[in-house]
Image (cartoon, rainbow, N blue to C red; front, side, top):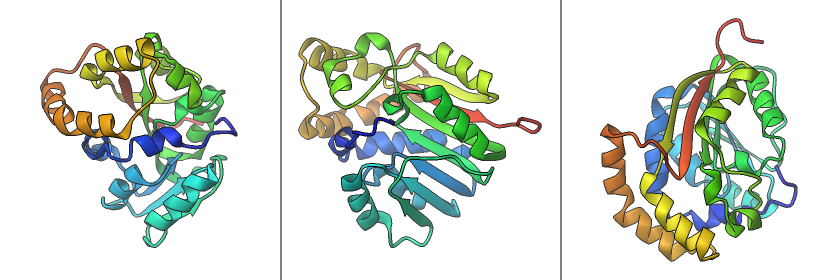
Length: 233
């Protein structure tokens, strides 16, 4: 992850409660017991994880400003360990690792995913949520430290090269493509919390229902679950 990353995009998304709950529900069937969330920000998604049946959650947040808020928000939860650092891997001790709008901040994303693979137990899972579609890459993406936006097949291929098996892979938030393109690509604007809140309240509940029975061919984001199987090293 970029050493200058301050987490400002995560702050702007704090009011997107329906959006985060939607992501949570997509991942929930794949939760293990010993979990880690990388780039946890101020804890919006962490709180959802801690409300579930997982046994423990290590949260990594490199921005000290974000870490202070994260510590205040979830530090008293007995399931949570709050770490002010970049993720450095582990010794096959984790069941599930979450990257929610974080991998795009990492310059060497393949090496980062290799570290995740090495830190997972056999049958452990990576739950990955990233921005999609390179044509949507904007000055806003660049300003908050995004190195890229992803395409489904190449990201799946990279995960498979590392040793993962893809269990779930889908584009996400089809309706967000047009407003993102006009506001951020053409309009060169920045993210406003008021706009995020409006979209979250009016669009997301309807879109969630539509995409539950009609998965989109493309979307503003990409959601993947990848598994480390028996015999993988």
